[in-house]
Image (tube, rainbow, N blue to C red):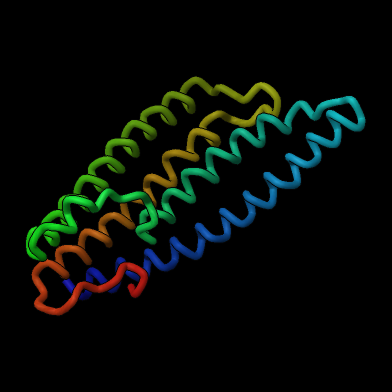
Length: 175
């Protein structure tokens, strides 16, 4: 399992770097476009017709990309009240179950988002203001959930390795 974990760990590190860039660029774009929209609407008394649409699509991409990063960092909320009072061996099993449940959820959302994108491509629907193909904003769900699948697989491997290893569990941040 070591070679698979190492290879997947390298991929996850690459994904993390790309996600950081995407989030940084999108966050900067949201700030600039949002400021321009407010400036135009309240100072110039004219709105930019494309800005609200761009902001909406950017928020979708930003939210799900950040959620993908949160999967790997383990920063999503986690109710540990019950699990923390269980024996260590049961805690390890609960960690594996959590990672499997996360993986299954990500696969389901990814699969349905692929179907929605196929429909958008078949219909050739474009956005009203920017006239871009609608599969582009809808990809803001599919792409991050695809990345979450890879990250969830890595976390599952780490959790299984920690469960079978007599050593203390490896932190997800020390991958």
